[in-house]
Amino acid sequence: MTVNMVTVVGGGLAGSECALQLARRGVRVRLFEMRPRVSSPAHHTANLAELVCSNSFKATRLDSAAGLLKEELRRMGSCLLSCAEKASVPAGGALAVDREQFSREVVQLVAQQEGIEVIREEVTDIPEGRVVIAAGPLASPALSARLHDLVGGDSLAFFDAAAPIVDAATLDCDVLFSQSRYGEAGEGDYLNAPLNREEYESFIDALVHAERVVLKDFEGGDLFQACQPAEEVARTGKDAIRFGAMKPVGLTDPRTGRRPWAAVQLRAENAERTAYNLVGFQTNLTFPEQRRVFRMIPGLENAEFFRYGVMHRNTFVDAPHVLDCTFAVPGTTVRLAGQITGTEGYMEAVASGLLAALNTWADLAGTPAVSLPRTGALGSLVAYATDPETVGYQPMHVNFGLVPPLEDAKRRGKRERYAAYADRALKDLDAYLQTRADLFHV
Image (cartoon, rainbow, N blue to C red; front, side, top):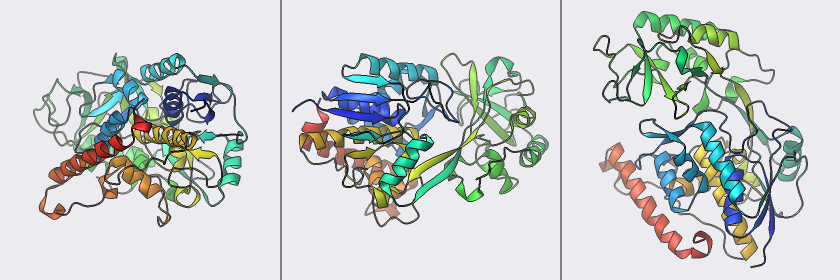
């Protein structure tokens, strides 16, 4: 096939994966990234594939939708999954990464791949030719406007939030203890801050009454459910967080030998464990209030913050009604990838970048588009996100609620049912991959 040129706009997770996959197949790629010339409200560096929120790619267990997605990506040859595994840090049953090392791995891989030209410029209009828009949910206003003109329909938005990161050297490890839920104390991948009932109730009272950042266009209904700020969760009920991010189940405070009333878990941000993320505590509190409130957590009284929690507006298109089944804009040579399509999550963004590359390659080669089995984590998400019958489209992670049910589902327990979903999905995926050697064997 004649070598072709594809323009990829956005050097995030989806754009980086897309560029690498196309280049591996002999396609020349112009990869545009506006940073550092133009930044966004959530980014802190100019690196490709910067993680702006958590450093966790979620569960690795095959009997979870997130773990199944990773295995599907592994079998389809994802480049960024490999980078994530190289940059991994201990996180129990999850794949978490040293975010700086992860970005370095991606930058190095892109630099080593022949055929990719990285251009540090803001794209303010839709480029000519074959294009993949992977600008992410924080695309610049100019590009967002052009994209809205191109796709028509409704332009939707929601608010996303990130948790604070604290300096490990400023934590009180006489109070904090190392343990993963249901693991032995001293052997876990998380630090745990135990709270008794009085400490918990005082903390929750301070959290719900703390001063928040005022966003002029903020509305409670625009909050994405999976990234609710902790203070919003706390407002729904005094014990809401104690049954969520602060649940003490499976933890034993070595100072008392008992389960605490509540606990805050901290996850390492890097391999050196010099920085920790407050798990589940994405927030929209002002920076001074974050210092005051989060220092009420036992063991964090003197905590110094490497990064405060932030909240920012994310934009996505009404994919089921403005894109085709390959996330292309009908009648054009433009395809979308990443969270701007409403497929929410880090690995989901990587997966959409991979699919964008494969479908763009199929377009160039004149072969059929990718049609993943609906029984899989990714196949079911794509089917949902591109189904014109979908009403009230909202950002969606992979989840087993999207896959076709098992015939004997009612006779199985939850864990057994999820394991069966995964087994069926991988068998169907392997069978499909064997029929598309043209796409997957490079």
